Length: 191
Ligand code: 5GP
Image (cartoon, rainbow, N blue to C red; front, side, top):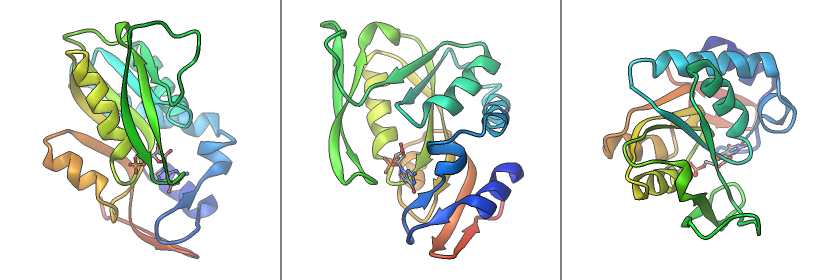
């Protein structure tokens, strides 16, 4: 997605070869017009995948997943990183190691929000090691639903997540694929 790649080149900052900072349009301040276009692109890419529900991980996945879900006219389910006292007994959880925070958390879902037979599109802001995506997949499959697609706004394809998900047979679509980066430069994969 050229609009997104141009924005990453203009405003993204590679902190090192592994971490990209995009706080100014995706992670802290949101460029709502760009995020709407991101949603449009996901809706187009998964138009023929018979998706019944969009699922994301709080917090930075919510905006692009919401933009996609609205345009696909589907409900959006948010997987939580912490349990709240307002959650009831039907919780299912899986442990995920966060590459950026360098610690594990329990990804949590109230089971009734994903139904057996659902065909789910998982959307997140970044795909790096694939930990978050595999955690989400595990919760979706524990509900008796299938994963019809995985959408990443930005994928760092020099990290192993993309290959692992593809090798496992999932349909993964990334809107900007970074082949390599380091302080001062970012190189995208050719489309
Ligand atoms: P993974 O589980 O694939 O290693 O990483 C995905 C999660 O880590 C995403 O939900 C995202 O929030 C975070 N993440 C991974 N890499 C980056 C990065 O380079 N920059 C930012 N801002 N977040 C990242």
